[in-house]
Structure formats: structure tokens, C-alpha cells
Image (cartoon, rainbow, N blue to C red; front, side, top):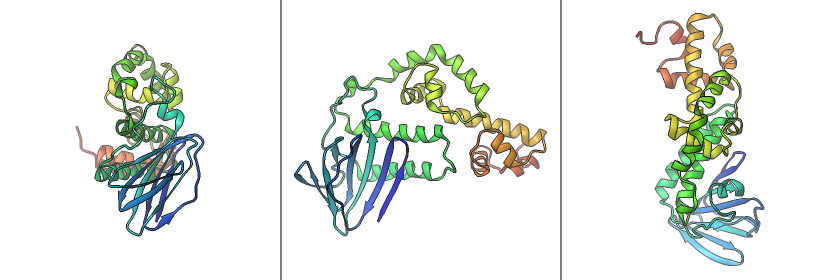
Length: 269
């Protein structure tokens, strides 16, 4: 069985049972091959490894590799764009643990969470996808990074965001109904988008997407009470990619559907 999810900067794979692929390399991606059940026989740069029980191997960009699984085998594969993984390290080519150890149950839990976040979205909001990418990146870096001192720490990043926080929040309040991107927001404080996500979260207490979602939900409440606009009209006017995206977000935030809220099902304050 094979399952793959692709985002602009990553690929997440789950491969189970008997499997074998042909020698290949990835020009611009790091690959982390993580065995979770059985044994994975992996050939990398003409060396053969038998890995199991979360003992992973990293394939650097350009390194030829291939692997095979038996009937009881299972691996997770995380492919991350090179530029994204090295971003934030003091060196262009970071020192990585070539044989990182993952907890099999933990990586299963993380992969389930990441794939659920991506699969549950209709016409994924770019901000939400990038925040999921950041969670994957943070987890992978924590396991494979050999020297944490090479990574920019949160305190350093925060200092760059704080002076522009008012401008950032004013911009979001003025444009939250638009289809915003993380690059656009990060450019206002001259940060990379993934440093911006972490800085914003540490400063404000929620991620940029969560903050924008709260604004959209509050405005949806206003429109449901004060206008006769349909839920579909409201969803598109507020920047949601589809009515179902509004339904899920609204129900999660309020405990009722938009129609129930309009009819007075929401608790009175």
C-alpha cells in the first residue's frame, strides 16, 4: 500500500507491505526514510543498510538510493525541500544526524495529525498549508539536527517581529477577507515565512492562520445576525475557499452550525 500527500515544499509518504523501487535521486530535496514496522533494506550511494524500529536514514539531495520492504514492512518518508530545511542554520549545509532515531509510535501520531490537517481542507488555504509545513519542519529538525546552536532561537526571532507587530495586526485586520499568503505577511517584517510563523505565534499566542480564522468567524457571526446573506455568500465574502470550510471552522469555534447560530441556537451572553 502506498499513500502520498504533496505540498509546495514537502512530500509525506506511507508505504507498507511488499515493495521495491528503482535507484533514483532527488535534486532539491532531503529525504528522511523512517522504518516503523519490519525491516527496510535500503541501498544508499552503493552501501546497503538494514534499518528498523525507527532507526532512520537521511538521503541528501543528489544521493542515489532505493529500498525494499517485506510483507510485514512499513516506512514513513518525509521529503523536505533543501532550501526549507537549511533555512535558519548558520551554514548552507547543516550538520545532520545521518542515522536519527524516531519513536515509531510518535512519528505515527505526528504523520496522522499532519495528513489529517491537509486532507480535511477544501481548496487548502495557503496559510494553513504553510503552518502544517512548519509543524513538520520543526519536528524533523528537532530529531535530525545535530547541533541546536546552529539554529536561530526564538528570542532572536522575536526581537525582529515586535517593532512591526502593530503594522502586522493592522494589515491583517484590513485584509483578512482576502486570500493572504505567508510570504506577503512575512515580508512586512523582513522575515522568512517560517520564522514569521514562529515569531507571530510566540508573540500573539496563536498562529497567523488561527488569528485570521478568528476574525473571519467573528465577522461571519455579524453577517449571520445582521444580514440575509446565505452561508455560501458569507463564506466567499470572508475569504473561505468553500462553504464547507466555513461550516467546519464555525462549528469548531462555536459548537453550532451557521444556520443554528442564525436561528438563535448560539448561547446568549
